[in-house]
Length: 138
Image 1 (tube, rainbow, N blue to C red):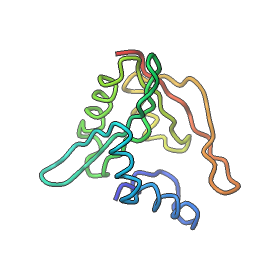
Image 2 (cartoon, one colour; image 1 turned 60 degrees about the horizontal axis):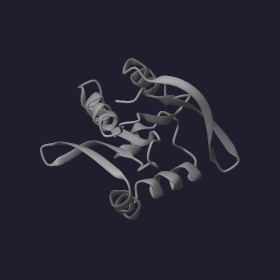
Image 3 (cartoon, rainbow, N blue to C red; image 1 turned 90 degrees about the horizontal axis):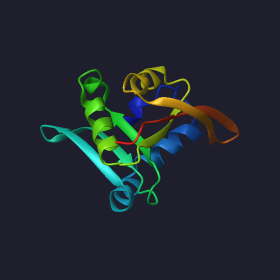
C-alpha cells in the first residue's frame, strides 16, 4: 500500500479519508485517463509510480506524485522514475513536498532539484507546510 510512503502520523480520520480517496480505484482510473502515469514493476507487481500533469504549452509539468513501496527505497527505482518524469517534461518539472518528509526532500535535492518556494496542504483546519522544488528544463 502506497500510504506507507507518507512520513506523517496517520492516526486521524480525516487523513485516512484523504488517503482512501487518493488511492481509490476510481481516482487512479481517472488519473490514468487524464494525466501521464509512469509505472515501475517488479515481476507482476507495481513497486512504484509517478503522476505528471499535462501542462499548458511552455509550462513546467507538476510531478503530482512519486511513490515507491518501502522495500524499493535506495535501489535506484525512484531516481529512474524521476529521470523519466524530467525526460517527459521538456520545460522541467515542479513538485510540492511536505516539510516533515525529510527523506523525500533529501532525495529530490540529491537529484538536483532546487527549493523555489512554499505552499500549504490543508486538511480540515490544519495547514501543512510544503516545499516547492523545481528541476531545470531537460
